[in-house]
Image 1 (tube, one colour):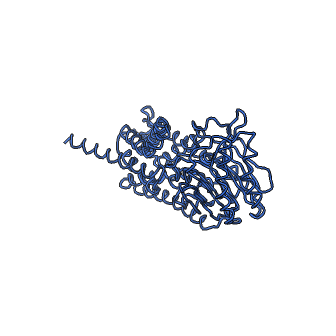
Image 2 (tube, rainbow, N blue to C red):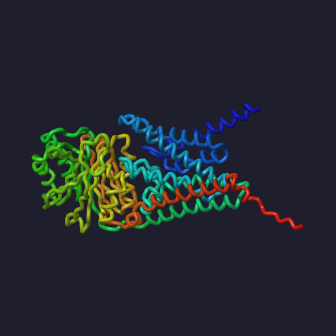
Image 3 (spheres, rainbow, N blue to C red):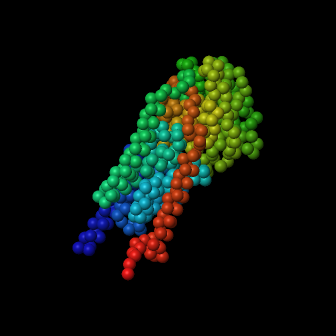
Length: 498
């Protein structure tokens, strides 16, 4: 009988492990099925509320780590297998700590604190990681929801931090209400109602925001990329030839009405003495047509190398933007930029402010938030992806558009050509793998919207840290109160009259 009972318990533990690992594997990562991530922590949480702490912690950490195997081949192909282990190992430990802290508070009848604990610890971790590591917010679970447009609108209020909080709050609320249903039904109903109420409020806000049109004029944009020219042109002459190759489809898009054409990141290398000669190709298009052309190069000036976007506008000198957030170790040779580049749109596009960022810059809430604060209505982003991450990395940038109130034009080599409005709707998109060039022509609204995130910034990230400190303090007080030395105070005082 004892052996059978142990086998049954082991079977339940294995099923819980498999369920959460599977939900994380398919609910997150490069091609997430967004609905699965809402339920991924639920099996582990239900298990933790009924089993010893060591079992709960082991299953929680192991399941989260196993779910992260969906990115193993991606990290391995980039030569970053050790980075995968470090990142997902830490994430698994944080998730397990959140589950155990939730368990500890729930078992001490502090169920409302337990309800908030896993969301608080998870968002605190994601926010602090965003400040400290070189990939910004790129691994946040909020990015599993990029296709769930009503929920995505929460980013305009809280950035990714509020989205991650609700994604963790929902399964905790379900787990606690199920756990308490028989013993404390009123409390279970209160927690379930509060959980569903918060989710419903967020979705109602999202639906209302989607129903409101983006302000401002419509701009016709063109995008050009090629995977035939996969590498970076390695000399001035080769880069100039490549510029000429790109000029033909760019001119065709302008002839079809494009007011702006965006090309990929780092088409080639240009040394400082030859930059002016290379600029002639796209500056000529701008001057002759009145369109703006944005192209990426590696600009070498003596010992300084920059990943740079060149902006060619009619009748004005060429402007540039230097990439601020560089991808280690591949871009360690470059000097990061320190300033934003804003400019007024050409006359026929109406009075608008446009801005430029490059690829990985949009894994971070800055500089995008700075562009939003400056009133940018359209952000151009030359980019280069690793093919398999085209959807994931390309659409991370779309969240910046929702947060900061601008439309996005992102052109990636070995990725996607993407045009999105400031609600996160994909206006038009195509892969870059057509030969010899992939092109896209789309019309997108280019008015700027103010958002709460622009006004208050990362307020929700700091709020999660404050909430985490509160629940940890709550647990500490409960433990101190229940210590043997304090048990006397729990006993009723009895007065005996003689």
